[in-house]
Image (cartoon, rainbow, N blue to C red):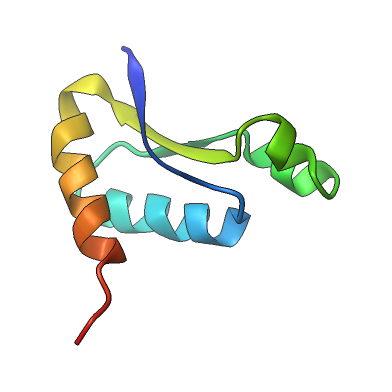
Length: 74
């Protein structure tokens, strides 16, 4: 199963929230490079941030959900 990054950031809490949101909607989302972010200040910059990944067959739908989630509410 090929995993695709659908969201990345440098804040572990934001990435974890996005994984929880995607999982609640039925996606098989996981965190990558989260250990680096928790290990020492600045390590997440070296790994390119914390990444939220889903299987490639779920990527398009997951990206749409991420965009909707990030829109400011009016």
